[in-house]
Length: 194
Image: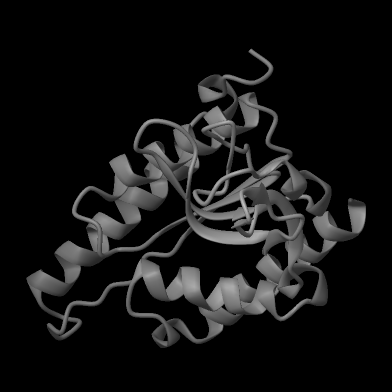
């Protein structure tokens, strides 16, 4: 498992570095999800199919002995209620528990072993989005998720010239959000360990 943990950590670090160096390679949060998914999927561990307990069908009234397979990485995977995690990664040994077409075990979503939440400047309530993503990851960690990642990028995308009030207002909002995030007391807001 340490190898998978290291793979995810290194891939995310390089991904974030690439986004910071080339901020125009994404347009939306969905782009960020897709770009990181593609990088993670490029690794053989995450691109293989793993067996589930969900039979492929019935033959002559008997359940098939052949089982469907699934990937260890999924986008927008559920975890209770109507909640979804942007990217969910599972230990391959847990995938055998899946026994239905919704990738659930006994009508319950599996807790991902790793979860990733994304955000961008495109959200109307960036602070609320950030805090909601943090809360979602913390809730999953309290359900035994091994590790959560919170990846938010904010750019000044206004087309106004830099010396205008419109540009300065947008820049001020980004800096205020940055200050709010830096002042956010992660430890105080954690369920786990408190």
